[in-house]
Length: 156
Image 1 (cartoon, helix red, strand yellow):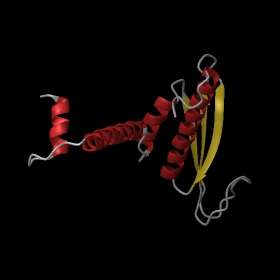
Image 2 (cartoon, helix red, strand yellow):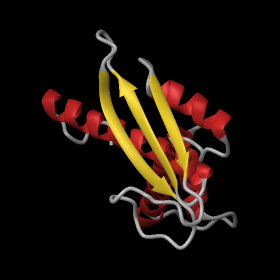
Image 3 (cartoon, helix red, strand yellow):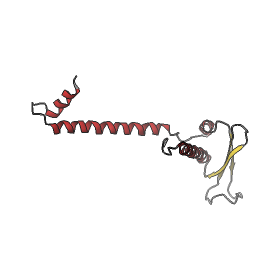
Image 4 (cartoon, one colour):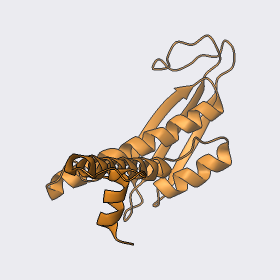
């Protein structure tokens, strides 16, 4: 099938009308716009697929953090009951708090590279905040690496 002939046929209509150059240009413009739209949608879907699903329980958190911290990590969860004394840096809350302190280890030395403490109303929320914290760290590391390579917007 001849593509220019197809375009002329589309632009001229079915009933034998005469093809004008402007009609053909409009059809080509629409094809280009639709192609650009498809490419943008494809890029959006590809980036969306890279996002990690929210963790639902401790097993998912264990698996995700294992991928995000390949050189090791630990976490300690502390539950505070009603009326229990909480540390001074705890946020004000009307419900008992969950404290999660997690550490990430370095590759060669095995020393602690990062220590973080998060507060949440539930264990599930604390686990999700921990995963989000690590994802934020990875994003910042990618930005720094891209900036050192000379293109700060390459992987964003």
